[in-house]
Amino acid sequence: RLVKSGKITSLEQIYLHSLPIKEYQIIDQLVGPSLKDEVMKITPVQKQTRAGQRTRFKAFVVVGDGNGHVGLGVKCSKEVATAIRGAIILAKLSVIPVRRGYWGNKIGKPHTVPCKVTGKCGSVTVRMVPAPRGAGIVAARVPKKVLQFAGIEDVFTSSRGSTKTLGNFVKATFECLLKTYGFLTPDFWKETRFTRSPFQEYTDLLGKPAKTLVLEDAERLDV
Image (tube, rainbow, N blue to C red; front, top):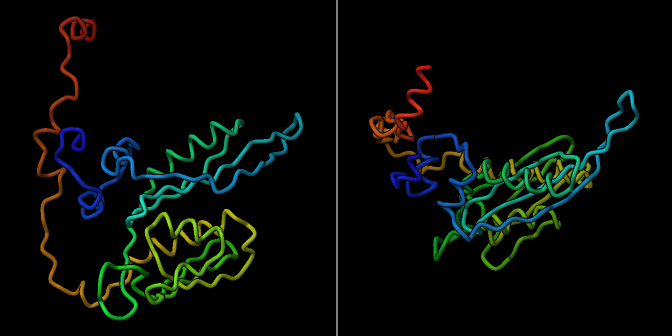
């Protein structure tokens, strides 16, 4: 409701106060048409039931705007189209900010990861190391796509474990990007000035009902 009424205008305001994103339309409105999505893999998964095997399809989808925001969604469904649609919605709800930094001199825009980061999922471990400008994304096909969506231009990566398990490979890469804001560099050592959360600031607006009840509806409720 705060996004709809124009009180929140950027994703950074949401991340600053750690507000939960519960509707994917919020991402659509704040990021807009620059948000792209790609299906990484669709794999059939089976469950043994009394009647026999039940096959469903599992879709892995990555979304990103190429400018510091990326999300990952995984969804199972009986039909491929439903799985993809559900995965896109889940990916939008899980969009995270990606911190970018420099390799050497702070000239131009940030282009690589700010520090060495490691992500792990299952047996797969992915490590990212800052790279000089112009090095490009030195990575396998799967993490390269995720890093492009995140807006990182140069990075060295190394991976170990069963990287052919694509689901774990994508999740480990995503965890790496999630950790970029977890490391406190000296430029974050400034004293924190706390500002009021939008929930506190717009209490009156949120206290009002979203829809005004029509008289007939009110009478029906009384009955």
